[in-house]
Length: 440
Image 1: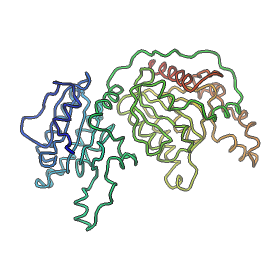
Image 2: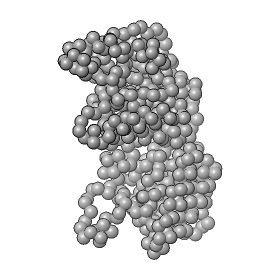
Image 3: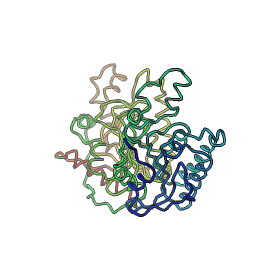
Image 4: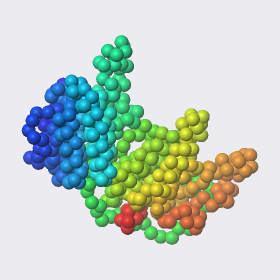
């Protein structure tokens, strides 16, 4: 199968006739320039594999670095597409260390709050993959692409055996959370349009009606049972009904969703616990959550966290992987963010897994959501040696949304209705989030 070259890809991604080269005209292993992607100015870095297998020497590295510096000065997002065997062997160490200079320029670009989006083509290996191919805010690869640090031919020559089949493939890396997805080149414009719709486009006026009305004190145990119902709205419903332009990032642990999205027109990074998985949050899920927090800070986007979890994982494996430290790091990260933060207590809020996503500037709760150090059954087991006092403790521990508002933990409550569907409650929550994101 003939794979697209640099110019082919540029023609696919950029608006017709908008590309302007930043190169001096000399043929090289990378093409740089600027153009327009569905009306948005962008800079592009695209490998040309047909030129010396896309390898990067000193001249190509200078071309990349200069283009990145120019994009930073002009405050342009960068779209990069790699296809390379790595650094140019015939140039040796001088070409090899150029990956440091490229990386430094890209980190300055990111430090300026500018998006860097990466598309890995077949093949991307060596120093290119271990530098500018792995520094994107969002990274996808084309189907079937060979993606790896050490090329399989080199591995075999050095070790006398073949590299295991299927490891260095785009699909396998996506399954392991190394990259954010697998996307055909022809589908790149759709993905980039969604991503830039969040990262670049301004907010729009909220359109959803805000749900108002009085909320009364609720019975704790009734709320616990209500939030455990299979049909209750979760984070997936919030994204399905209340959001647009959603791009979900890698999910090696499906119990946490991280997405670039717009809630009722307001761009944000959303980190949400997915009740549909019915799993406890482990260290990997919490690291995913922290990635979303860091993205929000770096890109200058508001962060919205959605809490809906039966708790953090309690197991030998979780202990050995540092579950307590991961919870602490999430709390510490959220408490030091300088971007606007909104936390949504949507359903169950159990233990450290809930606390990890709680400390936002504004905390919203659905009327029947709750927050407790343990599920009521666990609290009963500690205090009474059995679970028969769970209902009693659900009230005594002041875990309900109304009780949490009285103590200042929750700032706003979204009223629930007996006839709520996942869609109607999701829309009400999205509208409340948008109100506070707009007020920032």
